[in-house]
View 1 (cartoon, rainbow, N blue to C red):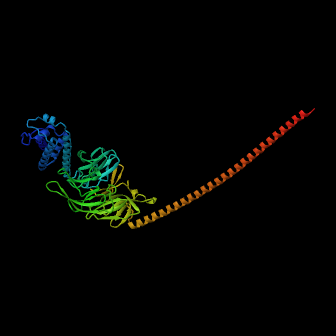
View 2: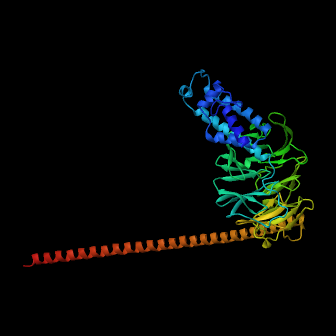
Length: 530
């Protein structure tokens, strides 16, 4: 109640409700009058009151100072050259200034700033739920799990189910908060589990895990390009400008990072060095340091290194191994990056092409799923790869409820997702490890054998096609020859018919002439008779 009274009076002194200040005196500054004529909406007032209630006295003083400055700037920017006289009423000011669009835009900016400060309060708090001392056997959602995220330092999981978003308490194995799914994608949980990010089209929302309340809305930011750094900052890329920014939740400020270009795929803490982070872009790793003082933080580029190939960080192909010394990407081939010096190591597995990868509780081991293209007996097998021993141990998936592997960092446990349930495993059932070189050699032989078989099949098919072509050509030749013979016979018959018809015509003509002669002779004989 004490904090609520202080917050309400702060709003009054800022000129949002009337014109009082902390000691009860009226204020009549031009900015106060303008802000009173165009007060901020109820949502902004609620955010201010809530923020002040969460803050300690020192933070309250800082918030009041910044709030006063932002409200004064709001009034000056929207008033432009207009200064209301001392006798102007609020209705006079509204009539004189007219359009309130500028104030609406200022209110949206103020609401974002307040939301970020509220998020900063949440980030600075202890874990939303403690990490369980006894690992639960299952995490159960209300429907089929489509995606799962886990807090690094809290017993909290964020589940995207078929119809809901669920924040789960790993200790009690029940939902802290459950709400209908209204997002296009879920992002990461903060380290303490108190905040999470979601995507809504082309914008990102930061929400409270305990209630689902939206604290801030960032335009043109996608969840996979938003990364929590620590208990006061985050890093993200804006897609409208293609620029990378550091977001300071303590001040609510954005700091552009011109040294980070060509996309943003992942950000991980640099091992053993507070305030330093390794930032991955598509084909480069950069080590940065966040320097914090009294004002806005500054960012210094410590070093950078090109990667041997483009890396596209994804939840089912990439991750950080326990201990935080190595990051990996398992898309098509396996790349392991030492986060100390950012040296990348390529693990040669061809002709085994890697489709998926997952961290394991052992910092030396990575789960990979690979296949040999075109070889039916080597499609989509799961292995545990030992980085130090360079061995592969095939996972006996017949003993598991699913092959959808994931890693829970807070309890350092392997898990598999099956329908609406996440099963946390005590161990992975594997066959004895085999040297990677042996597996690769076997796969090369299998691939070569398959190529020979395919070549033989193709050759046999080509021979069959050739014989079929020859048979078709022979058949066509016979058809043409038979057609020529039939045409010759028909022509001969036609000639014979024409000859016979001509002979018949000649015979008829001869008969006609003979009959004419006979008739003529008969007439002559009749005329000469006495």
